[in-house]
Length: 629
Image 1 (spheres, rainbow, N blue to C red):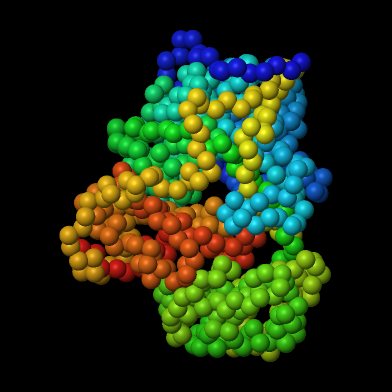
Image 2: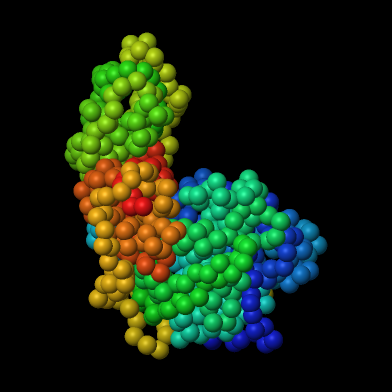
């Protein structure tokens, strides 16, 4: 039976708030978290985010090997908590379905039957666009994909989740939805929000963005980590969501971690670009967010404004890029750069560098005597960055994006890692033909030779290809209790934003709101930037996002004046001459930078030691700069 969903009605007698708990921020997060959240205190909805961009490539590889295309750890967690959730009326919403939400839902139903439980398990489909009608165009570069796609999934919004809950689902399993949809969908169901309720929808997107990465909202990976109590037992976050879209971020009492305006700010800045945060349900204005420390481990979020969503949906396409192999050698003592050169000469004498489609060489100093710890390719290292074997000299960047900077600032005693990665369509060429050649140099190379990786075969790698599709061309479908419910495109009544809406708000409003700095930005006591500023960084495809904020609002005019794009290039030579966007968020006393192309073709294909730019912010915080008193 097939039906068509209408607008979701409000739940009678449920004025709010709805308590939405997170129990996982990635595929591999703490298995006990679901049970901790269910048993630790009252919640209404249990959610988890399993689908990073990298995860889709992993699941595609699993499917090619005949393994399930969904997150199997979800079943382990459901075995622990499903009975309790049914007894207490806790709904479960998870994107663990990955590439096979129907198969995952079937597995959950089988689990429930084995446990003697009666559960209504719904699944959401329609995100899978394979086979594509034509080659997808890269949303960042405008290139047309020539390779054969493995997967192509549109990012759905929260409305199919709301429809599933409205039809009585106890568990909702989705494939590719936006991370925030795991909160927005339950909010739509609970409060009856419709497409025109832009501000409440935007508020729910912000709440969803805060809790989607689990403990990163409660003190995990926090710049000022020494202020976080009992981080080893960090509690997972809860969003108490209200009808107007406002929320309180908190955690269960008695758990470790910290919920403060600082930890929430850090997560708000994670993996974003413009203050206009685009999504399928609404465009949330991050430059309107207001934070207030309401009490211990309670941060209230208010004031979020919403605008119409774009008329397109983001699409994640993956394809097989080829095969890769990495060997890591340790260089110790004097003459680090010379040892790097000798090591490479010995290796390439046994297996020609030119025989590989791509070669990446990265020299990373370790420890106080070895430099800053920033990745610095060796003096002689080159990298083939495309199929035509184009050489791009790596002078202090460590990436295949073409940036330039200062080479290995110190060459005195120390320790460094020399990582050599080869990539090629032929698994044999990139396999033991390469790794064995490195081992063969073991007694005929630099003094103190030893390695960290044994010889091995090449492994396949996927490439993430961001694209888009007309939202009207995608039809989400909810299957629950034997009923198939279509959820047609339902835009708000006002005009939609075009794809160009990802830019800054018109008129440079955010920059205009920054109070001018009257002092000398070059004057002050020299100290690490991290003594006054926090940072969080990450990956968005081939781009890196770097958010920086100050905790003292009085320092924000200085930060905005000091940390320009040119200054960022000076402080982080690895970004080189790559295109950089800077966005101001005065409401958060923050700046956000997007470094385009720093990660090449994305994390799955990146040969970098810091392939997801997770440590980019910490490298910036370690740089000494003049800080006014």
